[in-house]
Length: 331
Image (cartoon, rainbow, N blue to C red):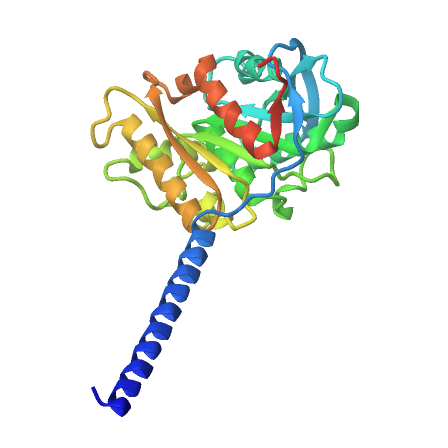
């Protein structure tokens, strides 16, 4: 090969390698950027050791807010023995329970309290129109912060879980952060109402997009809360949608799809599973940390997913990780 031609060939080869290297670097940068949009790195609070065998105290009928002449009450389930501040957790079941929802939450919160969590199960205004219910949830969260010194609560480690309407409301509380429009009702004014983690069962991203055959089932709960179907009051439905508020500042979600042996298309359980899965994907696409777990067979009610210690420990492990809770060596 002639010297001039050989030199030209070598220059072309070097240029090719530079271009190839540049393309590799650009690909790595693009991949990194994509990862940032799909899963946000969440700051973990400082860790603290907690045991799993604390004795538990239950305090009933504590008034946390008075609204329109009606006292809203909560039950407290707390651990006896931890030194220092402990994480707090709020539980909310479905709102159509015939039994007292505060009592319904006690056995679930006892499992958390044994593991060092300060728990509350709160009443909300069931028969009022939205946004009354989310205002009450926000007031209950503010109550935790307002009484943090008295109860030994770490205000940087507050989480919530629930199912059906309760799951939706705690998810909305998480997504909306410290939104001013829902902090003007109830007690403990001046305290923040944001939380650091949430675990809803069978919850939907918004009230306009549903899995095939699921619109009727999915909108039953929000219709009771709003007093109208989303198609009849789209502005209110948009205000009530988790997707309206979710940003990169939204805390981590642990989305639970309520498993069931019968999960044919259009069945209630399949609707909840697909709704939770879609919520998970929507959160991830917006850079919000999210996990999805299709729970085991939960029977005829999504609340059954939160009826046993094994499933609740799965939720607790998620909260431990996000809130920075570590376990004492005896666990």
